[in-house]
Picture: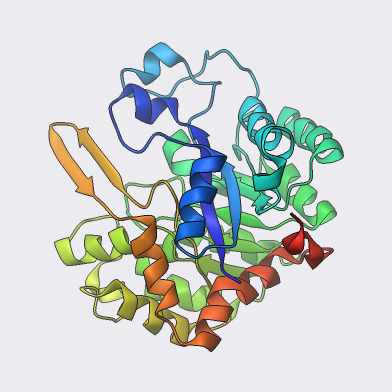
Length: 324
């Protein structure tokens, strides 16, 4: 069984309005393409920009309040869960939906909404992408502590976008690890291989309640080859041959055999945009992402493509993976 732990569904108006790509993915398209690549199940969650942000401001690359919704992700989570359970229940049966949240804004209202959703639609984890919405993930230990309490009560893990770039003050991998260390009864997965930061990866290995995923693996390897700033600098970087993403994935799987979880980040396995006069073109495919995990020896492939995710999820009933 191959489970993809990192996929977005829905529409991202910020990307769409500013001419960035990708900006959308629906459930049928994801499942159809993923099946062709050998994927059996998908962890899914909504896109990042939400309708609490003003649409006119989004067209000017600004994310400020004043949108048509008052509670972050209330619309997006409900919309995704209805797509999974009501519009396409046959395809939705192959997914493990997570809900997405803002760790800082309107916390009480978000928690009330998530409790209400949980009464109607099963979901299996909590997702945060704090960088884009400029919402400090460290707020989980302060204003957003109710999310940690909810996760412990419902036995739900977090999957959190991570960064090591100095200018990203919202999603530092070290901050997420600090939250995890302070909350030992809650499980955490740090996305994007901690940008290959060896110190953070080793800390993930040390903590019993943390894992990491390798989502958007190939364009992160490309970032190393091109000397781009969103990956760890050479002095802190996990050692491998980044010219060959399959080699990097195997090296990480061998170094962290019980901590690495495979995920593609569809549709964000690519990122193409004109930003501040610069053309950014980082392109991969679902087929290329799955080829890396399928090249692993069978024991490692099973670990990173199934077993480690199941350890993170702690499903009450794993028969959910055989429904449909």
